[in-house]
Image (cartoon, rainbow, N blue to C red; front, side, top):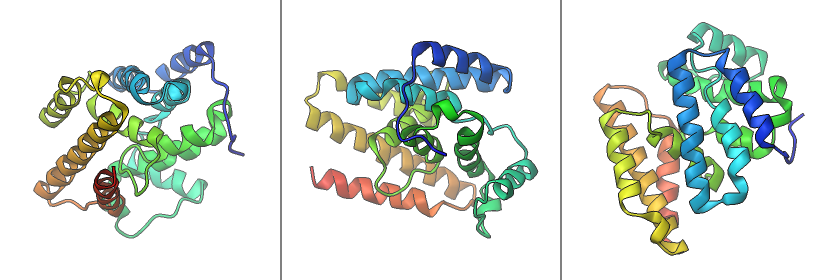
Amino acid sequence: MMMNDAHITLEMLDELRASIQNSMSPKRYIHTCAVEGMVARLCELFCPECTTELRAAALLHDITKEESLEKQLQLCREFDIIVQSGDVLAPKTFHAKTAAALIVREYPAFASEAVVSAVRWHTTGHADMTLGEQLLYLADYIDDSRMFPDCVRLRNYFWRADPGAMDESARIAHLYDTLIMSFDMTMRHLLDENATISLDTILARNALIEKKAGL
């Protein structure tokens, strides 16, 4: 059963970090810890009270990332996750669904609604994302371990604007602009690869454009 709330301590985060290190490659672990660090920085700007939960979500967001497609499909069957006909054409999206499901069973102390939903949507996004979902999505894109050109560009775009010096309204608008840019980059990359684009990503982008227009 998913918890409605979670009291996550720094000691619990330390124990979780040590636990996941044993279940992923060194490269994946470096990325995971970098996402934790980045989401903590973002929480300082937008949601300090969300910090420990989103740090936990960051540590858990890729716990199934290195599983094979066969294993991902097995986990989908195990957790009754609906697999659409086109999902196998976008195999990188499976790990968000399977990781979110696995948290509830394997890491119940961290299975708050905020943690599970942030992990569930950290890859594709979706319409009407919560602030926590937005922050983990962005942290995963711009963490300091990412050296892909788009990631570097987006990281520089976000931080060089000095969001800490902005008032709350301008800071939120800047967050939305950055997220919209990230969705544009993702879709452009998928188009270049002649790959499928998740409908959730398109809806996430459109919803943010509408939200920004309403600020």
